[in-house]
Length: 148
Image 1 (cartoon, rainbow, N blue to C red):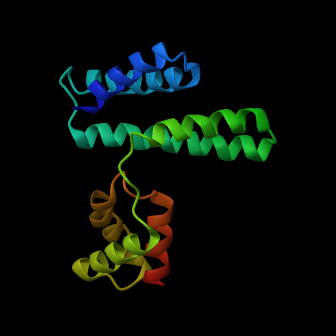
Image 2 (image 1 turned 180 degrees about the vertical axis):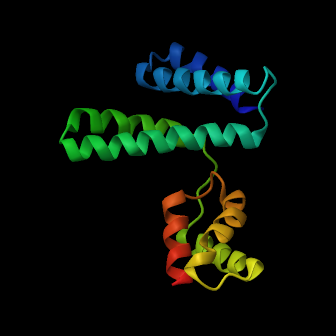
């Protein structure tokens, strides 16, 4: 079942169960998916494109969470954390730091990188392998550590 189909099913269930917060998040995700579909010329999104949209939604919420924590807005922090839990339900299982580290090592060997100047080359080859399965900041940090 496509992600959009799953979102539709879970939206109906959230309506029946009167889960307002979950319903709001599902509607936001559906809107983001539909907007991306419109940008793509009205065709259905591929799994990879759906994953890109989900990753963007997670990143936006993490950025908001960080800003609200800095501002001391605990009410909004709790709301965003709840939203993040719902969005993460649709993300693929995340790789552990050890798994990401192994993929980073493998990619460094593949690209022949040896210095920080090669970071762009490594990241370009690495990100498609871990897309949606690992946080970009973790990947970035590991690549920097290994190239320095």
